[in-house]
Figure 1 (spheres, rainbow, N blue to C red):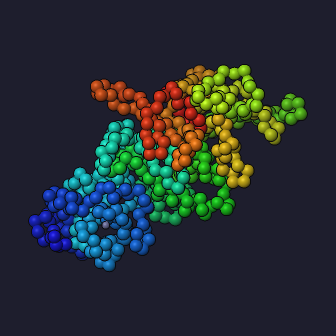
Figure 2 (figure 1 turned 90 degrees about the vertical axis):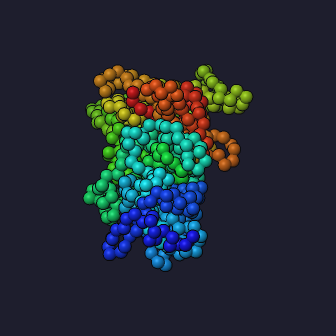
Length: 508
Ligand SMILES: [Zn+2]
């Protein structure tokens, strides 16, 4: 077929003049379908990698060849995209990729090369789906719920909101935090505002934060929109663009003068979460429902007898918190008279590590027993306002003294028991107008202690709400565990049997 076969024949339904250049737009459905069947090879397409020209390494004006999936700078004469189309039979349908100034509602241009004919993608279901895989649409009230869908390549079933992420460069601790944040309605329904688009094009934002925080937020929200996309081409997503962004803008440049908090985040999901929410551009808007308040009472004491120092008035102040961290009792070398449960009945050696601790009791203890600080204060805590979304950190790990990363060998393996719903803060007075607050577990990050090689160290368990077969309005609750690319059903009442580490609870 001639490379000029579409030009000047019936397929050209309308012509427009833009900037003095004649633009030809193909909107004839049969011609578009012919292009699709002759050019598009879906299994070669992913759109997860950062758009960088495979010839020049430029990141400007990048087009993706829909036949081989490679990126090229384009589209004019002598550009790599143009040359690629000339040199490869049937590699002639291209789509313009996102750049950093694009927003979630950017419309991506489909074009034939070397003919330079634009395609009216709104006439094609497949091209619309490709557009939504490059730059997923805003999450709306219609797409915010879990739905069973089938991907376009393998017809493999997946559930929106519960899509596995590929483990890039051993960064599965980043994946589980993306999954956790994707379960928050604030992140799901938060779509970039116009001011972010403007801010990304400037070196600094009006409030003084730099454009790195804007881009970090855009890249994170783009993955979350993909996780909720009901029209995925492939039922897994690579977070490689965000990982590369973290490596290029934070991890490599700032390692030499990084804070302890930052270094902890290099392999610890909880530290990464803390670091991430403080580096997002719209952190106040996104984290408002993650914040609670506690009343702290600090009394100066004599560390030798733990008694208050006379004439020193206790200091009281209210402070916000973004997560509750609970410490586990250290493992004793002596047998303790405590109820024990066995995670693996056939593994006797593990039984001594399976003391039965209740998560709700560990949290209540935090607010009923005073804490003695090293600098000589007795600190008492009282919840004044409980957050809508409560993050609970079960402190299992010690930090390595040399790298500051958490040491997975030095972890506390105790099982912490919980049910998917629990009442907290029962001893706090009048919190949120009632005595105690009910919370329901939404997401549970676990440490995967399997010794198998190539196993992901971090997995995540997610509560989904799926429509019932009888079409009744009530949804069926089902837990799923995402371990690498595998998604399997879990029993909600047995989630505690694994080494839970970081949890998202919702006030109900
Ligand atoms: Zn190609």
